[in-house]
Length: 124
Length: 133
Image (cartoon, rainbow over all chains, first blue to last red; front, side, top):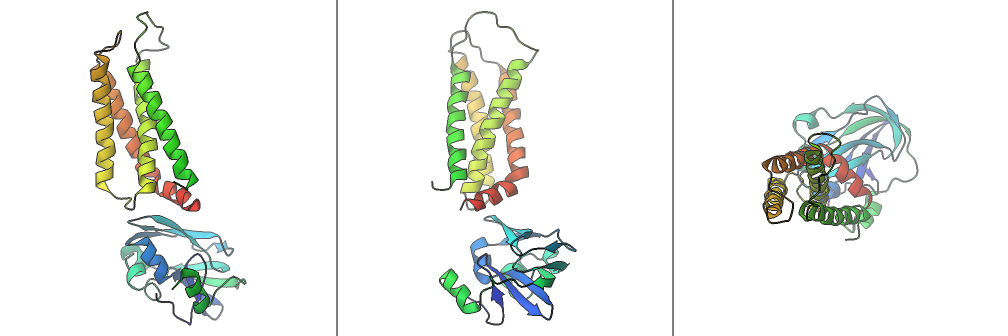
């Protein structure tokens, strides 16, 4: 399973890439594999400030639907505009073009995992 | 079935199936019954099928691994139609019960209403089911 070392992860299978006081967030390669073919990503929290652990959207796949949880606290600045027309990017490039939201981080919290710790969680 | 949400749906489905069978296939009393309003029995037919198919289709949606399965939808629809026809046909052999096409139409409308209901809430159903995984 793929888990780049420059990212941080959560036990809910989201990843975070920090860039200054902002961060990009998406779901992991493991998550997209469990979900199957993603058909719709619904995020209606742009502009909202959310705490870590709160739901910021849902991802709908052929097999199931899953809530998306904030890995850090912060304001949702942007939603990946490409996902509306191409939700399959979550499957094909989960750590790149398949990112979901950009947030202004207010608190990183203390529950983020390193790549090695996340791989232990997934048994990868 | 460890998931309590699915187990609840399964138990309710079984209870409602038994209730449906008893109410639709028990012999009539042979006495004149008082109706609150015209078409009351059609409302009962439609209501029974709406709840029954809603429970069954919800159970199918959260249990299967393809929420877009047309096969599942068709099976549930055919189950509603088949049961509607079957119970009406059986009623022609039950004392003081008669076969009534309008009852079947009420059953069919109940089935369709249930399918539309479940399709409109299926995302919520799956998210609730996820919480018990």
